[in-house]
Amino acid sequence: MKSAAISSLRVDPQLRADAESVLKDGETLSAFVEASVRSQIHARKTQAEFVTRGLASLEEAKRTGVYYSAEEVLDEPKDMLAAKSGEKAG
Image (cartoon, rainbow, N blue to C red; front, side, top):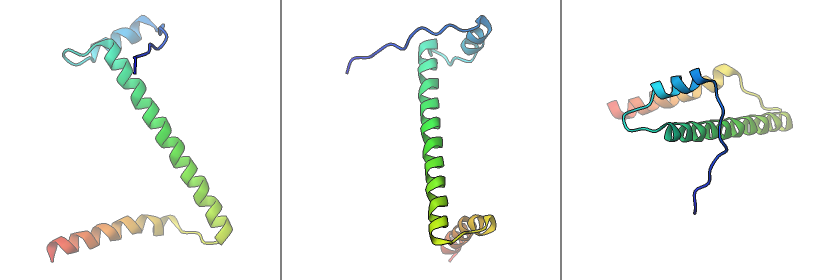
């Protein structure tokens, strides 16, 4: 697939200077911006998926009438870790 360009980005000179000041050796500003865009795309997709799962969970709780307290939810991974630690020790 051919590469495509994203339109020019006009920014405050200070923002450009700040971005250039954190570039790694051999890294270009273009590569930095591309990585930043990819990171934001991933974060936003992950957040949207999280919200979708949460809303589906809410609908399931409403449908079934089964709700869990925050304490119950947080205890589950703790119990899993404790069980896993017990397996290693035993």
